[in-house]
Image: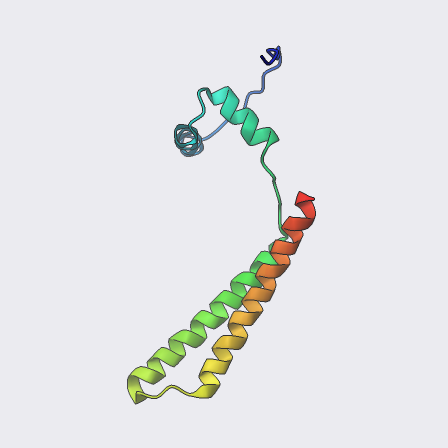
Length: 114
């Protein structure tokens, strides 16, 4: 049988109503018996990673770019009923750039987890 841990310290955190509601929802979905247990798991067993704003902006830029390309191609296909190889190549290139950025994020996460 595990020895009971004596916990004598407490932490107070102020939340907005929306933040509190979100916390309460996550707690209810977690299946933990007490909010204290849930919070300890969240504090000590959760990996927190922060990516730079520039990295996130680059990913957003790439996604917007490919989204614009797809919309332009859709307009052209709807008016001409033709799909051009160059259009498909542009989409493939855009998707590959997005994957490169996502692989970068994945490598950063892996390096933190080890």
